[in-house]
Image (cartoon, rainbow, N blue to C red; front, side, top):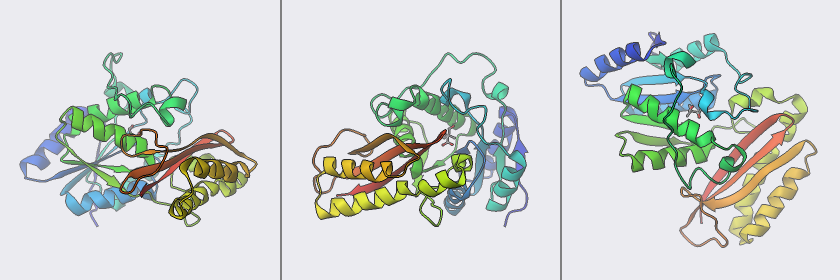
Length: 286
Ligand code: PAF
């Protein structure tokens, strides 16, 4: 296990260390995060270590991607714990910029990926994906990685970033990594910490409904009927409040009425338990 991990808070230092690694011929892997690390993040580091010689992780809670009434202020943060987890997972360089370092002046440039940003979370979190695309492109310019690793739990984010990279010819390979789940199926998320024990218990319905959707699809149940059955299953949990339950094509996220063979679909959902909004999804090839 690699013991030495550097932590740098400035863009200039980050560039110096990554430049040095690149001069040594190392392949640079990048894992962007907002911290409060869990096994999902650590699986991205593991994947990065498999194919890269130098792994950079960023921890930056990006204000641009939070709406005015969202949880930017209370988003969980624990840099001491994160540093230890990152170090033992094999991160070489941890980038922990402040908001002032990333955005010293008012930001006048926004990256906006049309269409793919619009459905699902784009409806309930207006501007969210512009904030994500803008910070991720900025981080790509800062780190200039050969490959960047993203979890499929944020499937729409992954689609937005992949589209941006393709449209703007950003020289980075985007590597999607599978969702990591708790033993009872709940997808790992930094926001799970907000759930009280009863909400946490009921939140397992997300994964259960996705598994059912997969089974119903195999049985030939029509997509609309599957969505209705999923919604009924979820609302049977008294604390669950549905934001959306959708099935769309992936990665373009266009509406679909009838599944056709070979098509790649995503069942996606966002559900609130109290003040906590959770997302989850399952991709299937028909
Ligand atoms: O997935 C996240 O943690 C964030 O959206 C990301 C990609 C680090 C951008 O802030």
